[in-house]
Image (cartoon, rainbow, N blue to C red; front, side, top):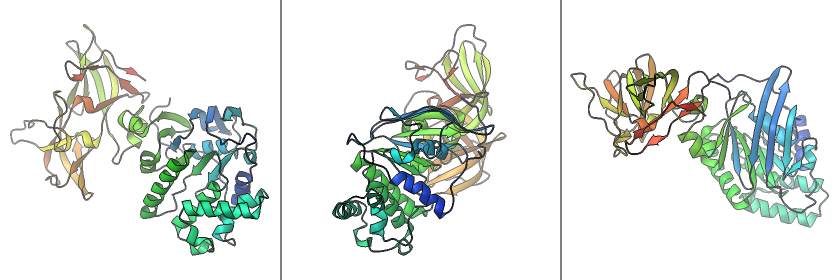
Length: 436
C-alpha cells in the first residue's frame, strides 16, 4: 500500500455536455430485464486497473460488494473513485482485472446489458419532458405497455414524494426535487443495484442533509445493493454500511464506518476522516528498560512491555483524535494538572495519561462545542471540547491523552502499527509493533 502522499490529479476523462450525458444515460437505462427474473445482488471487482498512458487512475483494486450492501467509495479528487464506478457500470473498460455481477464475468459486457442503474451528479434530466415522462423514459425505451408504465411511475412517485409534481418540467423544480426525479428514473426500472456518482454535490447544505436521509431510507426499504461515490466524509459515515477509502488509485482501507474511523489502516485514512481530522505528530518508538514508548513533541506515551534487551528505535507517526484530548490550564509552577478523560467524561481506564504542553492559537465556536487549535512545539494540534471550554487565545495549556486512545503509524509506509493490549496493566502492551 502507498505511504502518505498528497492526492494528485489523474487525467481521467469526463463526459460533459447534454449530448454526452444522454448517450451515457441511454446506455444505462435501456437495459433488458434480467432473464433469470432475479435482481442483481452482488458486485465483485477483481484486481482492476485502469491506465491512461503512464498514469494508473485505478491501480489493482479488489472489492466484493455483498447483497444489500451500501458501499461508499470515498477519497479526494483524483483518487480514481469515479473511474472505478464507471468500470463497474461498463462505461469505461478496465485495462486489467475483472468485473463480476452475481458471479458472472461482465468485463466485456456493454453497459446496456448489465442490470445496473446509474445516477449522475448532474441529474441528466430531459428539460422538455415532464417529471412523469422523465421517470417513465426507461420503460418506454423498453417498449413496455402504457398501462404498466403509468402504474410503475405512480408507485415510484409515491415512494419519492413526487406524486404532486408529475406534470411539472425540470426547470420548475428545486435541486432536491430534480435529484429525486433522477433517482426515480433509476428506481422505475427495478434494477438489482444502484450506482451513484456524487449525486448530492450540486445541492446546498440543507438539501444535502434531507436527500442524504431519503437515500438512506430508500436503501433500507429496497434492500438493494448501492455503490456510491463521494468525497464527503459525512455522507460516507452516515449512509454507508461499508466504506472503501481510495488514494492515488489504490485501496487504502475497506471496512465499516466505525472501523475506518476508530482503527484507520494508514496515516492517510486517519488524516482524511474526521473534522477536524486526526492529529498526526512525528514520533520515535524507543525501548527503555524493557518497555516500549512513543516519543512525540516532548511527550512520552507508554506502549507497554517489550522483550528483555530490546533496543527498538524506529520512526513513527503518533495519532490522536481531537475528541480524545483533554485540555486543561497549565499550572503556575509548570507541573501538568491531574489528567482527566476527554471532554470531562469519566475516565474509562486506570492507564496513566500522557501530557503535551502548548498554547491556544485559535478557538472555533461550533455551537454545542468548540475546537481549540493549539501550538505544541512545532506542531498544530486540534482539541474538540464541549462549549464553553473556558479557554482564551494565547493561554498556556496542557493537553492530555490516554495511551489506549493513541494510534501509531509507520513513518515510511504510512501503515498502521498494532500491538496486543495488556488488560492486566490496563495500558497498551507490545513487543515490537508491526505494520498491517
